[in-house]
Image (tube, rainbow, N blue to C red; front, side, top):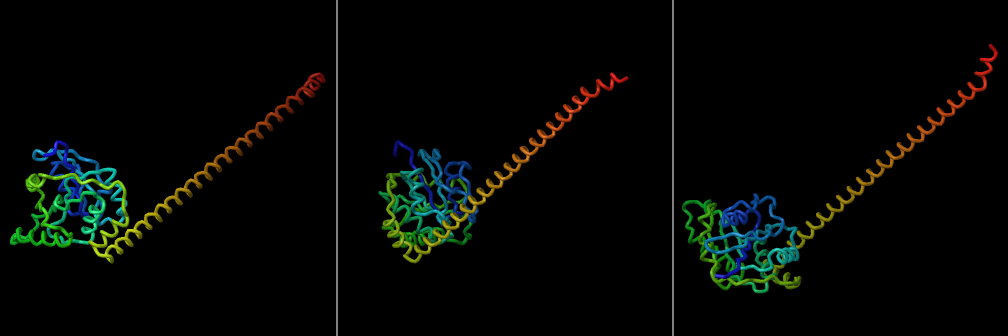
Length: 287
């Protein structure tokens, strides 16, 4: 057992149970779970320390793999910043879900970004096992999924599997899967050509091109929205400046009007005093 904490990193699509799985390990509600229709986790989370069955763990949640707005470069940036070393990679999937293009893409992300990628240190966490029909043979279903994962992910051996439901007891077997892990380090630089080559070899060239096109389209929408927001903000500031200038002009005009009124009042008062001085005495001496 390592003296330092083990860094456990989870990946999976939105709504597959990543955050729920981490909450079961940590016995907390620190990780926010989504519904699968919108992403709750937008960034790789900071390390969350916890003790699990004699192991000191640091848990990291991650965005959904089917979030098209996150590119390979963005995944690399987030990993370098938040989780530069990974001891255990947990790939979270619903037990009733088949391997999707997003799942293949996520596995490729780790192969292209980690220098010492060890598929044997990947644990496939199968969630929602309590939702299976009673007649389901779990061992047979698991064996089928292991063979599918081995074939689709190009693994040399059958992957480690952990069955979970919505109880903390279901994650206890994880302890037996943590022995003998070795750290996997994130590459300091991102190799776009290597990442594209590996992605195309795993998900297929056409599927990768479709993902790339979707990503570009999403980024264009995001840029257009930011430009629109910037334009609206510029117009708002312009209107605010115009309103402030109008108020300033009105104050100046009011000030000028007051000055003119004051001058008229002073002149009128001066004239009255002058007339009083000139004619008031005569009028008095005449009588």
